[in-house]
Image (cartoon, rainbow, N blue to C red):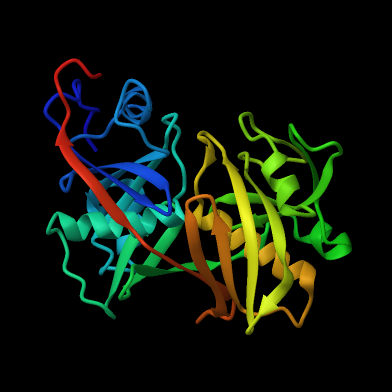
Length: 310
């Protein structure tokens, strides 16, 4: 792995989003231009940079230590999604970002993927298998789990969350989707709209490495035509409120499904400020339940970084 580049000038970039969760994307196949956290924060700044919830660097797995470790068991995982939050902090992965990452690889001619075909990629949360659909992409996000399983089993919640705009603290459930999430159920859409996410909610006890926090309202009725329906807003660690969060949508569906009981469906529609994504639960090959995330991905711009930025 090389030292970070000393200048951003002349670097090519794309801007893309998945249901409004937006990213700066860069192709670095040979791993020659690893950016510093400060440079990433500059690029993702919405007033002085390009603007984005995070930055995704497309690099061949063999050039990244975490990617190289995955290749032994998954030699088809040629590409690694090097993801950082908008403040420059490193993150395990991003569910919406996975779709946008694969769409970016296609747009750059780095891979080919016809509708119905699959592509395996590496992330810091392990291997993800992405299928192209007629209207976007489906991602096998892998297995989900409780972060505090004993507490979840005992009472259905494992923590308490306070946030501006909520009069009282709320019980919550923490879900591991390869990155950490804490899910809070609210009573109605007006309460969801009134929750202020300009600053990070307080979670007690918090997962060891921090957490994303989802505020969720179940639809009434919750299930229509064997599909569960929920609405969600999210505060992402290292970012703030975003228009969408793919792993957060999966975590929110997992928590509401758990609270709803054994008769809850396996297929869910999650409404976020940036649109809708689909979530499906299914048995995994290793005997653990997996989660599939589906939705669109869009590249909106391409360009070259001008002199004077970073």
